[in-house]
Length: 101
Image (cartoon, rainbow, N blue to C red; front, top):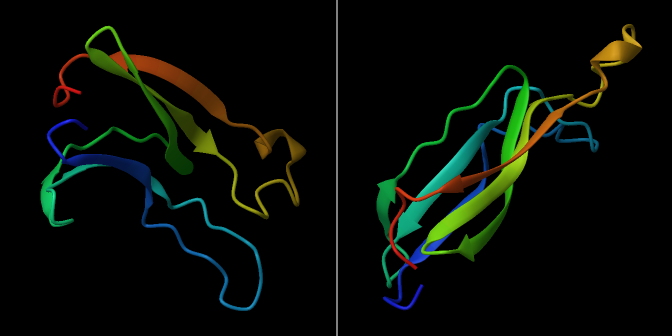
């Protein structure tokens, strides 16, 4: 951001199998503002849904921000018994209530 602060996004509460590449369904989206020195200024919060959730993209638009990601995503073994669980709900939303670019 021009102020030198940073908006960061991703996933929190993510659990990865220490001996493999499997992931859990417990992950929640993360949206945070960091100061110029890298310290946390504010956790801006972002609502998650059931199962695996994440924010994966951000872009500035018309004085606000576009945020994209998924909610209700699968973990590695979600579809082992029920194939219909291999699904996710993607989203793209504009937020005008976040810190200015």
